[in-house]
Length: 436
Image 1 (cartoon, one colour):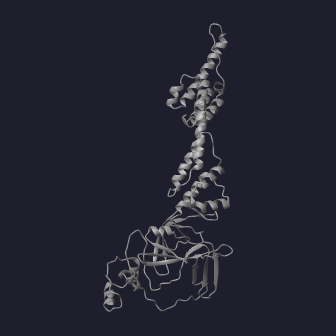
Image 2 (spheres, helix red, strand yellow; image 1 turned 180 degrees about the vertical axis):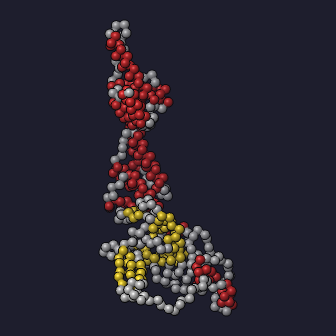
Image 3 (cartoon, helix red, strand yellow; image 1 turned 60 degrees about the vertical axis):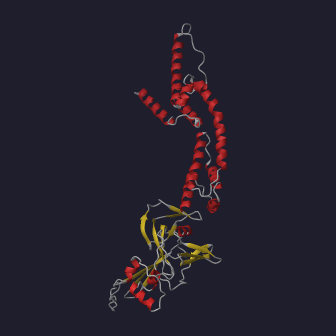
């Protein structure tokens, strides 16, 4: 039973260590695994020294001959082990060698070749640069293949050196990322750096919001499934992804797709590249950025502390309409019937025709447009106000509550919201500061 268990252990060990066949690139790893197996089975001497001359059965002592044949059988086991772990091409070439001569032949064939290959891979790895327009995923895949090849050749790249070489090979689009990484000495592994770079690339064209108000069709994420790395090296957890209705001072609404909800972020982020992809035009001036689409002004962004912030003052008070930024192309001019329909509280075409006949509106072609939510809402009948105020007749009979936030400036304890409780009878009120 003991011998059977030992044979089973030997077979298991061999299958694990020799799972990868010897090729022309992995000789160093293969040789290391072979040595581990032979040392475990106490047969390493067969590859380290030659067998010696054969004995003459007629003149040698019978006990010596029996021991000699036992040694020959063990050496043949080593030969079979080595051949079984090679590719068919190498098996045909080396099948007539003994174990010691076979290893010498392999060292002669592959060691110099491996050194030359190692030199070439290191040279290419150092010279590799990310090309303009190349995705970070494909670039990192190429760098990872170089590292894997170096490992097969017996050279394991130190983590700090590998991270430094990858950072130095990035183009100017990642200068800010590299600067933040070095400034905060993050000390990540190569795998963690790859995840950070992929997340950084996904950040282009990604919107960020810190409130659920306005977030529609959102998909909740598992805790820790996705995070955003900020400029100071901190990480903000993404809790949901959906479409966000950005309500502008003019009354226009921009629907921001792929919006990431991160409650710990102090301010929302709108991607200029996303607006450009959706047909919006942004014009940079000495003072701000003007964003428009189809000759319709949407908003302007004013620089503040190095960041462009959307101006929330209504500089065009006469514009009051709803307009969704989607991939669907539309063509509404400033004098279109659709915009006048929105400005005049969703009046019907009959009244618009009358205003044009009376000369109040400029004569335009009254095009047809679909019904939408805000238009239907404007025409809904409101429930009449009863003109009676209900008051509580005893203490705590009616409590008024309100929540306000998030605020850009947080309290000393980090709170960005406050909630109020007011008793209707006594008018006693209390304010609580909250972080979420």
